[in-house]
Image (tube, rainbow, N blue to C red; front, top):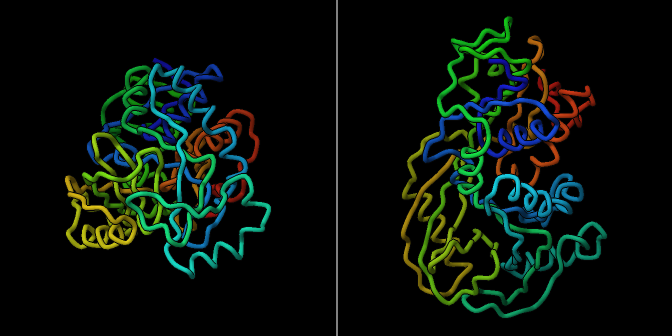
Amino acid sequence: MNVDYLIVGGGISGRLLQIELMKRGFSTLVYDKSNANHSTRVAAGLVNPVVGKFFTVGWRSDQYFPSLASHYKNLEETLKSKFFSSKPMKRIIASAGEQNRWLSKAHLDKYIDFCSFSHEDIKGLNTSFGVLNIHLAGEMDTEAFLSACNEILPTQSESFDYNVLDPEKQEYQSFLYKNIVFCEGYESFKNPYFKDHIEVVPTKGELLEIRAQGIPKDSIYLGPVFIQFIGNDMWRVGATYEQNQTSLEPTSLMRDDLEVKLNKLIDVPYEVVNHYCGIRPASIDRKPIMGKHPHIESMYVVNGMGSKAISMAPLLMREMSDYMEQDIPLPSEVDIKRFC
């Protein structure tokens, strides 16, 4: 069997790359052995153009976000599934200092399309310092997205064995491939071809699921933690951020940290129902890693998306496809050449 693109890893980036290549008429096959702590499967799936305590408009947000909802709506038709929703997102200002930080930036043009400030009372939340309404935000049901991909897209549901790969013959098991792309996330440290050329920082995130009543369910709320309605009075709460941690066991220390922060955001009683974690792939400079292996033809990598893959990957996977098929240079910020 021959295939144009063998893709190793079936998370957000791997699947969106596969879909983009298939749209262009290329044959693809994804190798992916999913498990309960797959970084995409445990992701909250939030898309947010305004990030961090300093109200930063994210890198290339003006390019990622305007067409994001329509892109995923089109994919829902392709995959015959429902997994993306545009949804109001409200950043709860936590203190007078944070309010002043925002007000010092509010006049800047770059914020006009992405957010607006208001004073409003929201039942169940502490909003005395105001609310930043974030536009073009939303959420993906990552489990539904991956399940749809597994059902419809060419997939080999097994682990990839590097020992069987012959990059000179461009052969793997019974497959001859024209190109191979590794989209492995934090597990790239196992990859003998790229582990000496890129540094992916495994970043552990722990989350809670709580049962709570009395909070309006029509928005996603951000503060010291985010809270996201997931149905039946259940909310997802997250997330912690621990670099160079690969344990898939949640810890009581991080649970306590999440609850302390949650208590600053909401003022209704709640019950913790679940506590779990996942590992995100981040890069040392917090930018994605994309490009060709420095010495092996037809071998590529896509990694380092961190928690922003849902926002960034639709555009970046188009750019990656342009690079592989038309030799159009990648943006220097993401090109693997910055490490090689």
